[in-house]
Length: 143
Image (cartoon, rainbow, N blue to C red):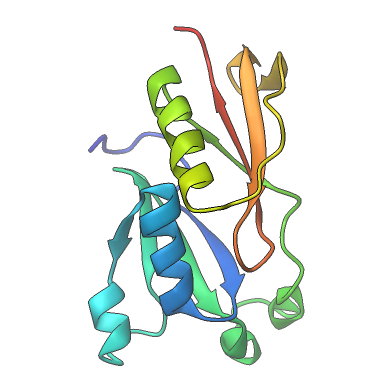
């Protein structure tokens, strides 16, 4: 793991059922659960899934919104997801994820071409929704 580098640490997703959401991200998307057992045992308030060594998605139950008091108005963000989150993968992992989502019956858009992002134009991309309506874009770059 890189230390003291700029990176995206985590994104909080509002979910109806954190256990079901963890299962979706593990089975359909292929992400590793983090603190799932601890959540099931009541030892933590939400589980997460690992995107890479530096980034996780926190799967926070909507029922926790009223406790989000770190900033005035933070609880009002419950149910108002961001437009979408983009995952950048190597080309072979892009193809494998698309096949995996298809196996799990997850609806996806057609593959798009030349979508602009942090590293320039990505030759291919597509979108899908999780069971809670959070939208994900998946892309790969030519390296």
